[in-house]
Image 1 (cartoon, rainbow, N blue to C red):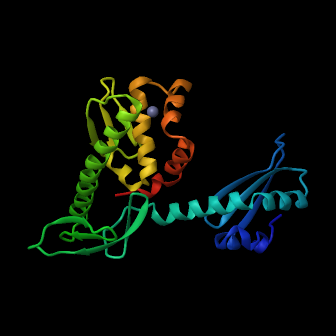
Image 2: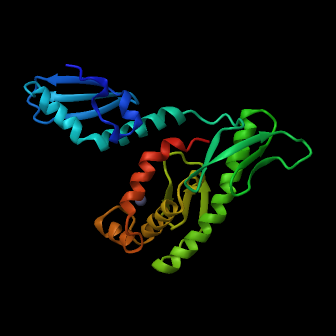
Image 3: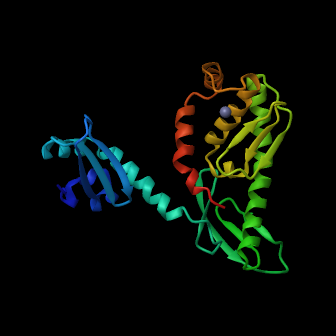
Length: 244
Ligand SMILES: [Zn+2]
């Protein structure tokens, strides 16, 4: 029972105009309709076998905003899942914004990545590993400076003291707090917006008081960061973009 492609109306955004809907009717005792974005142009709708076409259309109509968002995220994922090749015209995330990259090689100038507040400039021989190391070195240096400052700031506010700050290359772990209250943060965190970075700092500092994710822990986080849930969601939705 394929619905016409143009079914979802304009309000949901340009992406959804080309979406193909595949309807799967289930014989099982399933009682609800569910949606799954299977690619940037495809949504699968699972419904109990006796659901009418009108009900399915109504359900899709109701979920337009959700579909638009899920499709946008899915298309971002497929676009940027690959690691950067460090060519001019590519973009890099820094503090939540995308900045254009310009690449050149002048052996007499300082090698490495540079940022002028708007654009990135990479001066490096055309070898992907060396280019990547330049980028990692730059983010790591920025992370060390930024995060030690934010840790000191929130230490005072929360009355909790860390025994040092370390920058790691961790891919999926934004931060951690050791038994001895040493804090570690991934250099990749510098790609996130400042308020998201602050949430991770507060999260790890709160582990000095609570070495778990109990309700006591979350109320400690909540004392300092009111909308931490939106920051967690942001990280979950964007971490696939932070490839270096
Ligand atoms: Zn934690």
